[in-house]
Image (cartoon, rainbow, N blue to C red; front, side):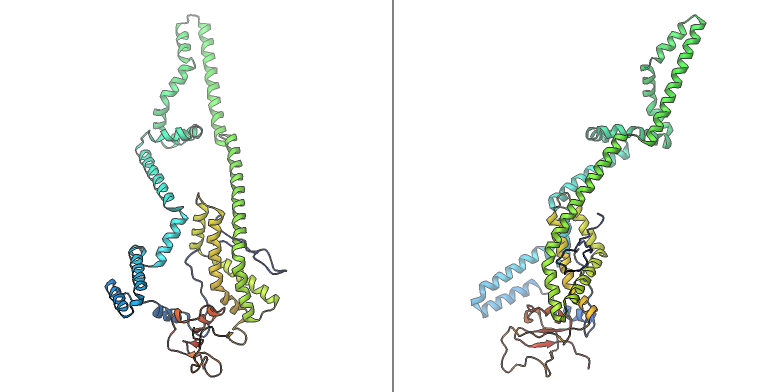
Length: 427
């Protein structure tokens, strides 16, 4: 297969739902999600300004840890462990990469190539290819040693092709190379002794007969040469062609078996998270069975289209398929992980594109945090409380089933139970 397309038809489809859908999977591409009540670019800028801390020096971190340890001696061991972990990380991947994403991309590339050992082996092969290329460029006959040793039959089959190409590109070189062998072949055929016999013959009739025989022999040799050339141009080796076709058919069969295994494993791995997402939004939008089946089908097709249009994903998937140490699990885990990630990103976008805003507004389940009696949970009328900036994730209750949906709208529940928004709603 040129790309990794995964059949997701059997991912727990609803009865009567179409089963002729197909997918294949990669990393690092974030789907565009339409915002509700705000601009996506400004939302991302807000999140980046709030969530990305300013760079601080190592000395500042050590001083801060020392100050905190003096103020809270009971936490000294924990603070020391946190500082040690930070500096180990800084001296690790941060010393080589300027961002976590760069480290992740490097890890994926190394895994796709088969690991450090496979990369080292590839470097050895490249070094051998470089030496062979240098030998070919300089005309060093030593480059033929391994070729004839490893592929003796192939080397013999290529001989007529090589000579034919040399005849077209450099006839003088062909004559110089083949001349000595042509003389040897004529000698082995007895041409020299035959000519000596004719020169020693005194009977004119026998000389004429001998010349006639020599002429007939030469005509036969020339005819055989012409036939050999014609056969070589049409079918140099029919048996080799048959073996090649059988090998190609066998490789295609093996590849199909491997692809079927990947498909089955991916379908099994994504079935549960896909069903959970569909159930979540079906409940949110109060969908009936037919609407739920339609939403599931549309979501799957959207993810398929997104993945198959992602050249980065296809490159990563093909690298994993081409790896000599590949396995069904290694390829399927990558594809399933990518499908699931994109499903989470696309679920609300697809639901909103079909059914619009959730019916009755956002669902407001009971809070999980402890709410002070004097702290209002919502604004007047049940809406969210307006705050000046997006709270950090540590203050948000992200375990709610509608947490992702609310964040897209610029809303969320705090762990103390309050329902808040950091985006002004239109009047």
